[in-house]
Amino acid sequence: MAEITYNHIEGIKGAEAVAMCIYLALKGVSKEEIRKRMIDEYYPIIETLDFDDLVKNYEFPEICQKSVPLAIYCFNIKRY
Image (tube, rainbow, N blue to C red; front, side, top):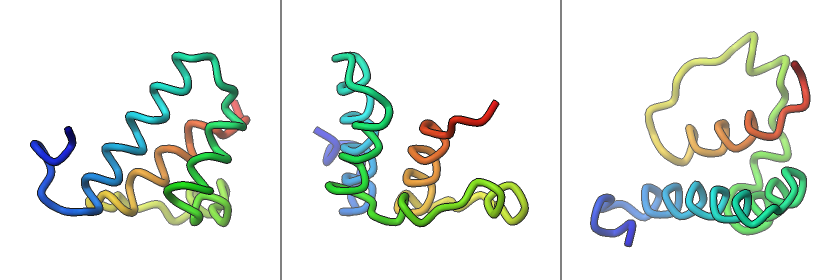
C-alpha cells in the first residue's frame, strides 16, 4: 500500500517500518521487542545510535532512511 504514496524503495521501507511499529504496539508487543524487530528486519543502525550524541549533534535528516531509524530509536529511549 505504501507504493501509492512513495515512489522510492527507502520511502516504502520507512512507511512499512512505521506501520509495523504501530501494529505491534497496538497488539501489546513490548517496546524492547519492537526495537529488536526493527533492528533485525529494517534498520540495524538503531543499535549503534547514542542518545547523548544525538542531543549534541542532531540535525534533521530529511531522507527516510535517516529520519525513520532515529524516530524508532527515540520511541525506545528510557530517559525522562
